[in-house]
Length: 374
Ligand code: UD1
Image (cartoon, rainbow, N blue to C red; front, top):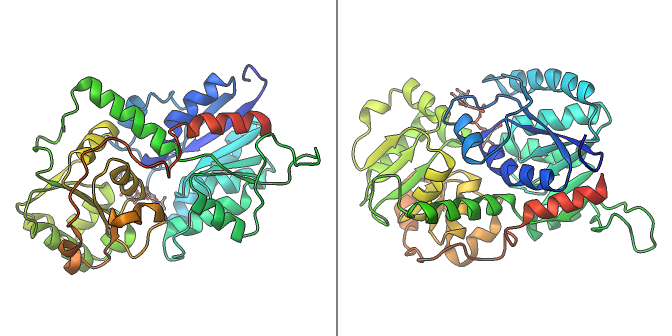
């Protein structure tokens, strides 16, 4: 139980959730809210999980479910069963889930079935592409949640269109009755994490740990099922990267490595494409800040590039982060044959810019909102 008598159970499992939970856990603790951290084990490699806990200063999870890989149904189903037991045992005041992974979905379902209040951080994002597993996960999580914490006005507009009402900050409607609203704009906790990472970089000398000179390489990342599960499409992306005019650094996601191995594509990789192991959070932020441009299908990386003034090409048909498309900073390119037409904007030599993802205090706002809500 926390100083103010409240107990929250947080569920994380995949790399981007560790980044989001870092700043929030710190603020919850400062607000006297006790947090039980549960790691589903969806991501389990040391450089996909442990390293992130260390760099983001996350507390050791009280529960590690060790789920590992599997089909969507098997992975989500195993999580659901074990999470139910943990939630029953801990009897928290509420359960909190992040983002759009299978860990989010399982956590949301487990809480809803046990009638425990559910809070969704990064609520309201929509790609409007129901073939993406993440889209189903986020729609279900939002609709099962009692409190939806949105990162952007775009996300709030999506929720409003789906019939949700805004939650007033102090928990009361104008007439003094308890608020019936469910969503609140808090800003993006990934921006909080990014600001903290840049401060660490500055203290450490600001260099890129990639070993490549600033602005003399592209940083790539690829892991979406739509890009990597079809061997022919994956080969086309590798071929596109190998046509670059500068080195392309590709920290390879285990899902992509496995697909590339199965399709026997790795032996064909040559300069300028350089495949490396997945990077930790701090090294990835440094590699982003110093890149000539970022080529990615990751949501988080699109935003990080945007905030750091680095042009980005998103290797998809759509993005949930519409704000990054402003002034052409992020361009959509689902076709590997068209990739290099999109890399034109020079990077802006700047630190974190733009207020669209909040003021860097999203985690604090979440803790304040929870203090009223719980
Ligand atoms: C998951 C999320 C995705 C998120 C991404 C971040 C879902 C549906 N997708 O995708 O939204 O952007 O995480 O990375 O939840 N693997 C390992 N070691 C690991 C983790 C994964 O070897 O530590 C391999 C396994 O072979 C596994 C495959 O990667 O089968 C896919 O992992 P999984 O967590 O199922 O989905 P991601 O593709 O990582």
